[in-house]
Length: 404
Ligand SMILES: *[C@@H]1O[C@H](CO)[C@@H](O)[C@H](O)[C@H]1NC(C)=O
Ligand SMILES: *[C@@H]1O[C@H](CO)[C@@H](O)[C@H](O)[C@H]1NC(C)=O
Ligand SMILES: *[C@@H]1O[C@H](CO)[C@@H](O)[C@H](O)[C@H]1NC(C)=O
Ligand SMILES: *[C@@H]1O[C@H](CO)[C@@H](O)[C@H](O)[C@H]1NC(C)=O
Ligand SMILES: *[C@@H]1O[C@H](CO)[C@@H](O)[C@H](O)[C@H]1NC(C)=O
Ligand SMILES: *[C@@H]1O[C@H](CO)[C@@H](O)[C@H](O)[C@H]1NC(C)=O
Ligand SMILES: *[C@@H]1O[C@H](CO)[C@@H](O)[C@H](O)[C@H]1NC(C)=O
Ligand SMILES: *[C@@H]1O[C@H](CO)[C@@H](O)[C@H](O)[C@H]1NC(C)=O
Image (cartoon, rainbow, N blue to C red; front, side):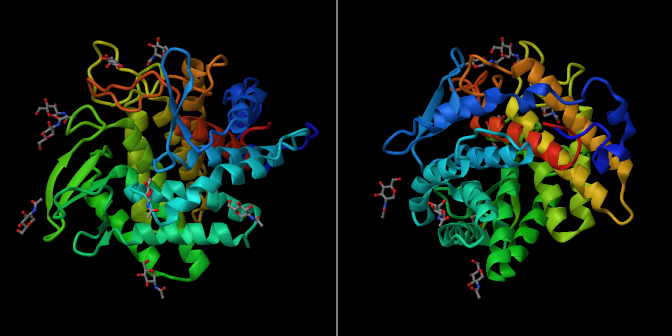
């Protein structure tokens, strides 16, 4: 516990938080139930390795998938995130989260040279990126990050100017999804390790094209842009996981808020910051009065549209990253920084109120993996929803906006 006269600097800058008796973020973010639930899963790793992705919708029991799945990196990354939590909060009697994170990363190593996850190699790299903040000299982690980055770079088509998201039967069909913005981070991490600036150039080209072709003038976004790989022309703008081809799928919008803020962080290119702001503004302006993130902003209201708590926790971390970029401007933009961080905390509070589920294995319910009949998969826990919930809690502490 810090003595009460010691206030983090950023709290002093935002008196509205400091004076508020009720905390603007949900207490559940720092509940010890988080460590209890995650540890239980971590201690029971299937052999051969399989990874939790989402729960069933009745009892909240994790469903497991083979390592060659786009979501594999999130559970091991969660274990590293809890190591960060233990340090930030000076927690006692903690399990060895790093050891568990390493154990759960092992089955990912084979994927470096053999996977079918497409652009999602960036997500697979997450635990290895975190390992490098624990042990920057770890050769296994360095090799993994560089291999996944090379994989993504090999998917770059200079005529289109993007990395290919998904493989297609017709090689001239080149599909790029807004989610791909999240996978560019591995290119910057590998650039820092190798000094290979081509990786940065690929990331900038991909983000620039995405800014032009996925993001609409009102800051909303298409899920999928189909390009012709031979000519570079845009063929169509469609959806894979959203409600309609011209709708705004909320998780895609959340990936965009985060992805463009991250691009600004790495490049200081104002167009990227502006794009993140516009996407964030659309997201916040289109939340319903109860603050619950719907699975698609254009889905019909009748019958009630299911929420997507994962879109909510992703956008919350994206808004916190955006807030940090506003604070880093010269001169800083404290009004912008406070606006985004306050919005992040409100989304976390509203989402916790709806979806915090002590009796489930996941932390949250009300995730929507996708919502297309007949394979609609709504009202579940989701591993990346939980991951970003924990990360948002850590980021709030790092930013001085919350205490453990
Ligand atoms: C390096 O990271 C790998 C993969 O996460 C892990 O298995 C290994 O134990 C780590 N080694 C050291 C020396 O830290
Ligand atoms: C690649 O992984 C698949 C499982 O995803 C496995 O069946 C196959 O044997 C592997 N190939 C090689 C060359 O290791
Ligand atoms: C830099 O990365 C690109 C993309 O992976 C690769 O084609 C190129 O050979 C690398 N350059 C060097 C000097 O390693
Ligand atoms: C892309 O353009 C080439 C050349 O015009 C054409 O042959 C090919 O069918 C196009 N592919 C798609 C998916 O439209
Ligand atoms: C989107 O458009 C394609 C044709 O371009 C069509 O096949 C598909 O059914 C449409 N999807 C939705 C969800 O409307
Ligand atoms: C999408 O297209 C349909 C049919 O053209 C139209 O009714 C609807 O308003 C459009 N929605 C958006 C968000 O543009
Ligand atoms: C949230 O999930 C519960 C059941 O788990 C369900 O009854 C409720 O309708 C869901 N709410 C939304 C907005 O998705
Ligand atoms: C939720 O998913 C179920 C199938 O699991 C589907 O029948 C239902 O229509 C979906 N709910 C809504 C409101 O879209």
